[in-house]
Structure formats: structure tokens, C-alpha cells
Image (cartoon, rainbow, N blue to C red; front, top):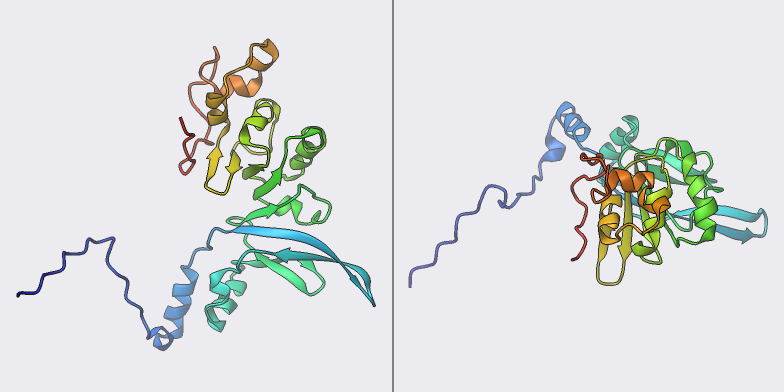
Length: 243
């Protein structure tokens, strides 16, 4: 029986072949290759702990639950060049412990919402994620603390009590950035909703103080006078809500 021919492989689906001679390339060429490596977008999970020691008493520790940047662990050369080019920098330094961070690409994720343990790093954070319930503590106090993130470009809120409980936050709060996503997590799936999508799922309440709120006017086209052009927040990658 003649052997069956394998179907041709399309351009994007071609299998990449490992290149084992990289170390034999001239140093100038290897350096150029490492310089072309872009920092990988990561969610950097940070948790604060306090440890009781015999000699130093109570010591604060910050644990990073996320993997370290790959380029820092490929080889000594890649690590040296990444540090030399300041692709990543030591941050959240506590004693001898630290975390490698690139604030332009890394999203800092904490729980609960407590800024007291990274006052120094607050002005540097550009992408931030936290978990919370929309209770009185957040509504009256936690939301105001977010204004301290003066360099913020993107904000993700993991809604522990469901995204439906956060409609009033989407209506009333002025966040430091327009790129705000409300995240619903359950064991089966994770879904993200922008302000516009929250309003589409939850019609305006029959009270003028809510129906005429600033963000309802801006995002919800069902409200008379709403803006026709949505802000840059409606960028690709947001999961569409279920019908």
C-alpha cells in the first residue's frame, strides 16, 4: 500500500525547529538578539506576610506567587543584558527579598486592597488588579485610595460578590484611568466586563440621580444624550457577556 502523504503545513502552523548553535554566534549578534526580546506581560501576584523571628522580632515579607521573567533565567548572558538594559528592576525590596518588575507591562495584583505596605511603589504602578467586595469599606474608603495610583493606565477589579454588585461603582466612581475591567470569577470561567457592558446588562434604574449619572450618560447609549463614540476602554480582548 502506498504511504499517505501528509497534508502541507500552512505558514503560521509550521513547527519551529530548535536552534542549538546560538552560543556559537558572535557576541555582537547574540547581544542584538537579546535586545530584541520584549518583556512578557505578566500578572505579578504579591502577598504581604509578617513573620515573628527571635532576633529581629516581627519582620515584614512580600511573597511573589508568580513566575520570574523568563529572560532572567535563560542563561547568564540573557540575565546580565536584561538587568543592564533595565528591562526589569528590583522592586518591593524587603531585607534581602525583592521582586523583578517591569511597570510598563506587568500588572501588580494584590488582595485585599491595602496600600500601606508599598507606599514607595505606588506612584510607579501602571497596571493594577485587586480583589474586593463592594461593601461600605470599599465604597467609602477603598475607592479613594485608588486615586493614589497616579501613573495608572489599566485597572482590573475581581468582584468577589459578582459583577452585578458593582454597577453603582461603575456609575459613580471616577477612577484614575478609563481602562477599568470588572472581573467575574468562578471555577468554570473568568469573564471581564467594561463599564459599557455592565450598563448593557443592568438597565438604568428609574431614578434620575442614577439614570443621569455622568458615566451612564457617557457609556449607555440608551440614555438620551449618551456619547456616540466610546472611549478607548473598549479595546479588544474583553469577553462579551453572555446573553
